[in-house]
Length: 402
Ligand SMILES: [Mn+2]
Image (cartoon, rainbow, N blue to C red):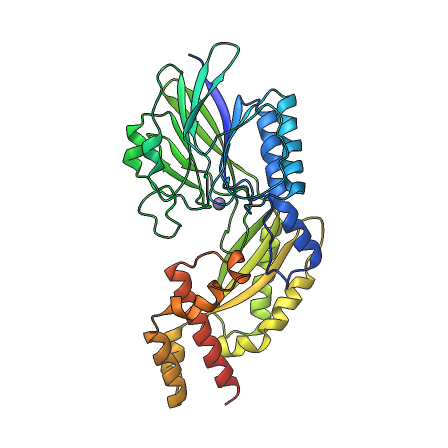
């Protein structure tokens, strides 16, 4: 039995709308809209460069259930590049690009193997006789809550066995509970590799059995920070190697600067500039959020915060960019609260600290027919941060107008 080598990617979301970025310059918005495709082209180039046996894509190739014609055609072009290099692609569709959507069919070339709505096995055979069984299913509709893992049954005969599964590892309450499974259920199948999809954050779930979420290939919002990418996997008997390959065209970044001096403009300006210079060195595109851990100096900083952001944006130059899209003040809430004197402001803080029903407060937004399509669910710690931000904003407004 000889070794096999393949690339595993997931959550391409090729036609992501990148809406809600109205404060960014049009050239950057354009680059962002193009970024999932650029990232995908990098993956195809890597596959050809490494001369892999095949690639697997574990769901959510398209962001919307009605796949746009343009995206489909561009996707096919990439698949044709693989075909010219005798590289097959094994694909499942996820909750975003489930099979119940409506779209005009753009037939893929014959090196592309798409799994149907029912779990099935596809056999890869190389000229030297090495064989791999690949198991998977595409989401027949958006919501698949069943334990689909139970339908994965190992068929003896092949040298290697790979499971493609788009779903949620149990115990991960932050994500939609689609096609849930436990690590034990994966281990029981005795496969050589589990090619997962759905979670956008890269995660090596387990080394033995080898179970990996590659994460998405390009960050889509400030919530998806850091390098994104795909995996190069090599199976050789019982030896398994995995290598992460970065593919982000634009990296969403977040860095914190702790304000130690008195919050004077010049000191903070210098530190922000140094941070931008340092980011600049890797030659990549960055969208940078700077968090100023302001301690008790927040009130002074508020006065020039907007100007500072704009001045830092003037610093941008060259082929790649480091764009500061936001500077956020992190304040010591305890300090602000204890410095309040007016009963009105004390009441704001009191309300904020007791406020519990974030779901109800956000409901009008999340139920809005247009807005809801672009919103991700909010984790409890994000809700808390939003509440803190609202509180300090209110307190600062009233403090400034006292
Ligand atoms: Mn996804």
